[in-house]
Length: 57
Image 1 (cartoon, rainbow, N blue to C red):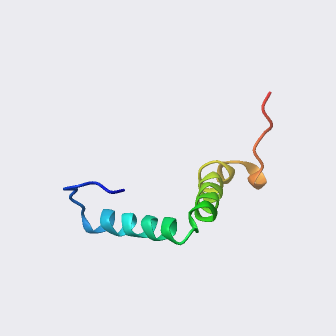
Image 2: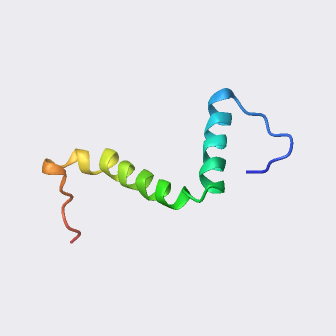
């Protein structure tokens, strides 16, 4: 995340600052686990009845 001469828009700069804060205070692993769980729920489980993914064959 240390990029010399990088140009950021407001949204990108805010996202990088949040990630740097998570990393520096040691909360990144728990944040990342939460992020992955929410992405799985949003992308996959929401598309199946009762949120249950079918088992692989």
